[in-house]
Image (tube, rainbow, N blue to C red; front, side, top):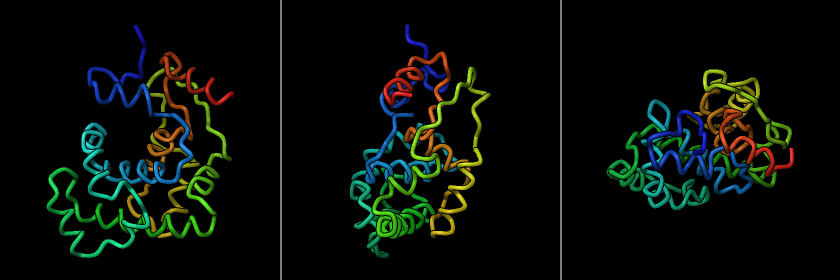
Length: 192
């Protein structure tokens, strides 16, 4: 029987996400933006709520294409506000549009969102060795720096906790507990 992180038990959708995606290093700009928007949408909600709406988000937000999202107008915002398949929060929808515009600016300046975002961990995933879920931090100095810089660049819903959850999701940090079967798989896959 596989040992998993305690948060990834008893829910097939969460287990699949844990087993296949969470903590795997992501370097694709579109997928990084997707995770960023989903983590922002989660603020105040459970990850299961957001994950269960992920496909709806992909459909509603043009597969997380920042160039398309940056052009959303009031008509599109109202369409999103009436879409029962996503979290219908005007502030979060407006933040998604603002964040898309900010990502486009970052891509101009840094050539990729990937290059920019991974600088906060020196381009290499941190390998934590937490034995219990209680040892895993809710934010770090790196996530605080990321949050501060993102806010300076016009991003919304990017507090240190959201930034750290994003870092965990996209593999900038390996926060699987050490007994979890994914901890060593991810560590070994990136040759650290």
